[in-house]
Image 1 (cartoon, one colour):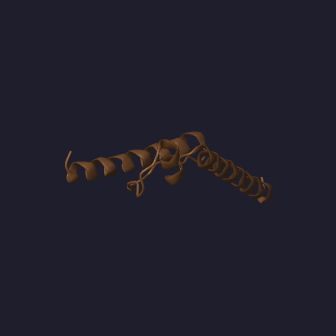
Image 2: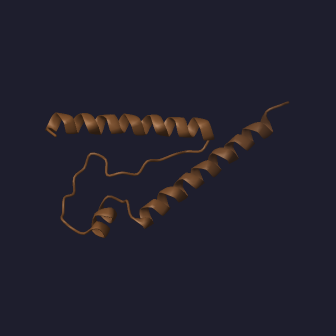
Image 3: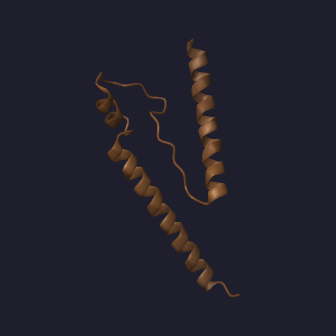
Length: 89
């Protein structure tokens, strides 16, 4: 795989992730987030646990991202209820 192939693969993966995120949010009404290393390569050599932590793909980071989405969903639902409560029937 040459540099152009790699760049095209990364671009296609980004488009696919964006479409999947959009469809997920529109179909379910729930926010979505894809966790990945993006277009970055490791700056230091290390084991799997080290690399997961460096790219924020370890259990702690995944749990934090999930909590963030849950909080976002709660805020959106709360805002929707406030608007609905102030809208005349």
